[in-house]
Image 1 (cartoon, helix red, strand yellow):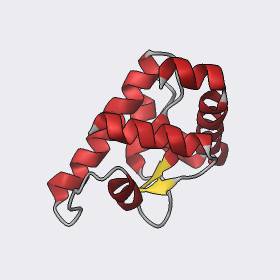
Image 2 (cartoon, helix red, strand yellow; image 1 turned 90 degrees about the horizontal axis):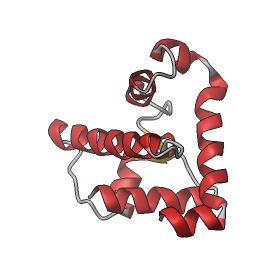
Image 3 (cartoon, rainbow, N blue to C red; image 1 turned 30 degrees about the vertical axis):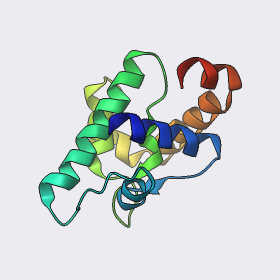
Image 4 (cartoon, rainbow, N blue to C red; image 1 turned 45 degrees about the vertical axis):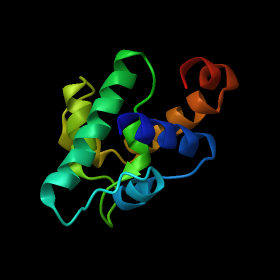
Length: 121
């Protein structure tokens, strides 16, 4: 499942799309998770964390920046992940309106580069 999500997020970054909701990613990646079941929605978050942790370790941008959860945009999970990765205190990161936007732009720039796409996709 992680591979399908990662591939869809990379495609999204290349088309300047996003952020996309959990539900939309669920449908697009054909995961068939039922978000009415708390555990399955939690599973999506865990997969996104794993993908972004792997990307971060490899020196690539956080793909989970392209995901939003809920009507108000990014939920706390993304910012808490960033805190675990050493980027600052999550509440401060969440208050910084440019933080998420910068991560989205980094994804688009990195994955829009054909060399990066061919090498890491």
